[in-house]
Length: 325
Image (cartoon, rainbow, N blue to C red):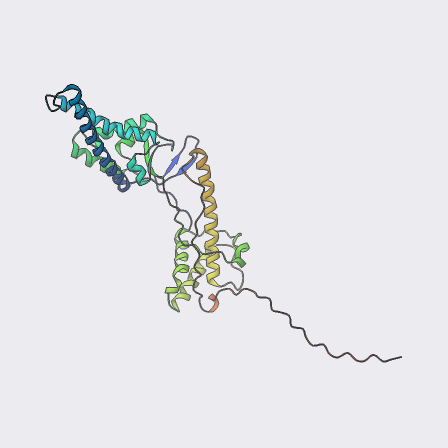
């Protein structure tokens, strides 16, 4: 199938005016990444609390629960955990915390560039005050932050709006789905096709028909195939060669459309890689082994390869005797 147009908020324009197509991380994946980070932050906070208590007791020979020492230590350790943890990881790992790395997410700038220390610090400070742990009106700020995250077209939270960042998926599969193979006799003809009138919905209907025509009984299968072929022929030029069966015609059109889409996507990702190294690997479309469509009856029978017939020597008539002089 062809690549679908990116939804609003899923394209970034770099500083070099190159349009980058990305997959924006939404609330579900971001909440899961946050939960993983919260678990690690809780373990880190508990470990620091125990370790600091032991050090204070051995050094000052005093009980840390006396006076305001314990409250001061809690404030300092919370600042270290809830600010230092995301700032450290997002700076070192270029926009990833352990939770984001596990979910395949990365924080980038609005122009697609890597985040720096100031971006990570702004995000962490907003998170501490409003989002998580949200020291200002905890429950109200949590609900408000979740609402902003779900309603923003680019899936941004308040910290992203302040820092000028966005969270994207790094591991974006190229889901082409099943695509029929090009019938060899039609390859040269298909290269000349004008496919501008063939939209995604019709191409998807053709793909589903070719992939599942074994499950359709006659005469509905032939009628549906002929209807799809007529509709495709009305939207493409030139017409199919004479005598081409319907399934081969539809398979050739779909295979050629996929080939051109793969080339366009490869060029776009190559341009993006020059601006943002590492975002896109070289694309190699993975086509599943094409299951041969079920042959259809009548004029929809599959193409028969031309097999050269062996020449059989014909008996020669006897030659008349040559008269002697």
